[in-house]
Image (cartoon, rainbow, N blue to C red; front, side, top):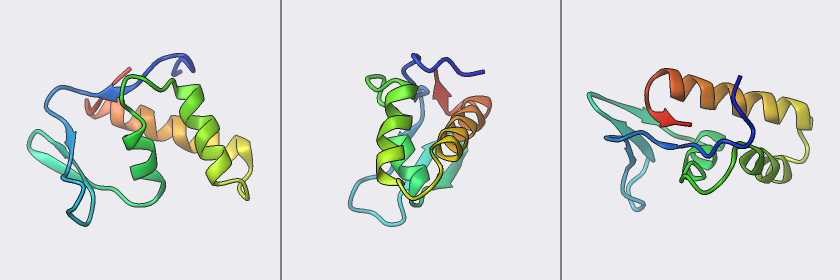
Length: 90
C-alpha cells in the first residue's frame, strides 16, 4: 500500500524528456516510457513536493466526470507500477 502522505519523485537516473519534444517520454536507464494524458499529468507532479493525496485530489478535479474512487485507484496503481520498476521513489 502506498502512503497517501508520501511525496513521490523520480528515481535517480530517471527524467522527463525535454518539454518541446513530442511524444513526452519518461527516460529511465536502458528504457523509456511514452507518456500520454493522465500518465504525463501524474509523472509531472512526482516532484518530491506533492503528496500522493495531493496528486489524487488535483487529478480528480481534472477528471471530474470519472468516479473519484476510480481515479484514485488508477493513480495509486500507476505509482505502484512505477515504483516496482524502480522509476519512482516514495
